[in-house]
Length: 349
Image (cartoon, rainbow, N blue to C red; front, top):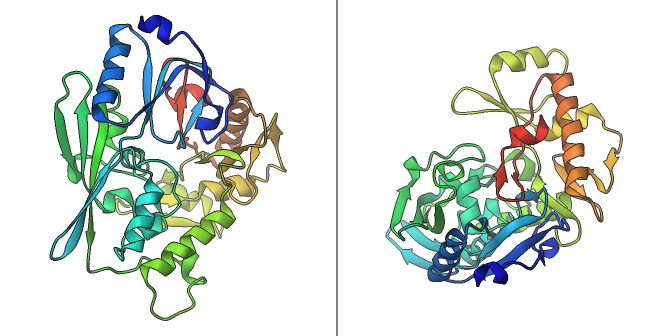
């Protein structure tokens, strides 16, 4: 019964922000936990591959997917006010930007620096999204997951989520037999704006509020980043490399203006976009895949790029940066093969 039901092919072109013309055997949108459990159970029963996605905004499909792509649309937001904070209990299928916009409009400030980041709440936890001085880990209280085997639920509190730069425990330990169903976010009422140098010039008044920062961030992102509705992309393709101070000292004599940031662990984060820009790739294009000129960390699909076009371009960038700076770039996006995720080390080697 289900084998026949999943024998058709359905297009994912309008359901992934890279706008890759790829198909899946079946596409399912789930609005409840019960639906999610039921579909995953059927897939396991008939040995059909499946993957759970939010907005498919941080992935690259490499080939037609041989199984079921489940899109999480489990929604719901509950806000509880406490003396010194607000607690947000948010179901994982809610869009991240929708939550940011909602809280700002309610006068609850604290998420505005993360405005206009695509994707859903569950993906925000997996990826530990971050921008303009704020990361998901800074406001996360807990992440609730459910076992797709026995339906048992478990809350993973912040310190056990192993959040790091664009990483978490959910990318590794709880990545297939579990699904994120809810996150808890704590926003302190004693709000203090996070104003990096990159947004200072946009502030016109002495006293700034969350509404103003929200609008500034939205303006910057709209001017700097391509709209996935118009130009296929998955945001930053590569992570900013983390290097040692010793490695930085070898670069500074040759590149005095190299932008870098001190990490809490004593390591150094440098700009991958700067590295790519410094290499001067001269408008390199593979098929319909190219580097976005306003933000060199982003690879775009100009029209009908294939996954192979994008991968070939990424490999060229990777090898050139490695040769020139002796720094190995690491992809920020996930790669999806015919039956599931594929390690980036297998893609760029």
